[in-house]
Length: 447
Ligand code: PLP
Image (cartoon, rainbow, N blue to C red; front, side, top):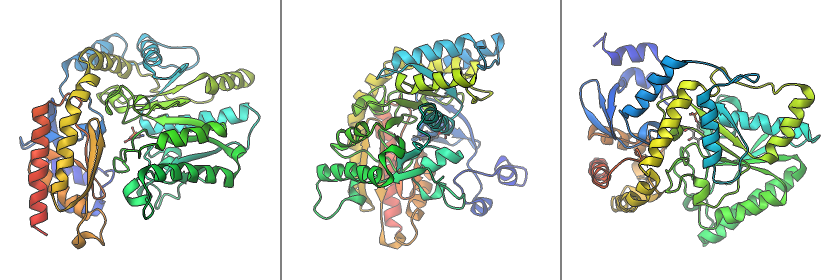
């Protein structure tokens, strides 16, 4: 239909992570509304949102308390900024709340609007700090292959995925990548998981030594990798990696954009893996994505030199119009209240065994070569000889079958991700995986 929303979408929008020419042929899925773990398209078809949008709608769709919190703040003060000693209640309250919630001592919060901006800001503050400390050579940053940290010029450089670099002339030269912690694809013959974890730490140390430890400022990592295919670190990984950072005085930035606020069965992934980050980036479940907002938390090691330098030069020359936006901050505060009042972290722990058992059960399908996950996040990796020359084509077929059967997942190449709203019930987890199982059976039968 030439005037349908689907047709107008293809006519006017350029989409992320889509082959533009292909989309002209296939059209788009137009979602109209949502309630709980479900969304509905314009034709009235209902789907389980098995990805919580983009790993983010923790409290589910249609949460009236968030709508009301936004409306109240819109009426009172729809916008104000946080530049040059000006501020407002919601940003103050949210900053205080995040410092209270932080799993390791943090001293200041810097608000941004997206995960990418939070990581980008982290890089700028790290560089600023190195200059403040009189160490201008200490500017290199290490992240990991398959890590995902966003798409701004600097955060896309941190991201360790070819699609985010190809044809963009990235990564920036100061940003280096170390071994991905994915055991199945990266292990050497006969290497145990523990040996592999130690080798990852050794690879990191070798890179630091090859570059010169005095040139390395920081290491960025997600506690559990998300968009790189849900890579759960092998046993012993963080215990081996963290001492290397300590040894060379390298700042550790935990990207908690997906793990933060309950996903792994603790409030933060940092707790699940006993991490000691100097900085944390937060977004997504911070507001359940009802409003765009992100936050960068920094400890005193980071803050003190930055404060000294801004005092010396009279200004911290960085900031966004939307930093700490009052409506976004008010929604985030209400969202955190819901997460705490309903003990969604406890709920994740209760539901996770069913979720992980059903996820592991997908391995009965001949297409599934690996399942991996923790808490309420996981992925099933697919493989078939008919698709071995076209990475991503099997994932796309599975995605289409899931969608046909009323489940929204996300194919990261051929890994199908599952990351539902945290409010999902035991019964709904079973519904989700019933659809996934049936759909994968159909895809397998068609090959
Ligand atoms: N960091 C992680 C771990 C993410 O998963 C994402 C987004 O998926 C980002 C950063 C970037 O966030 P945004 O898309 O809000 O820029």
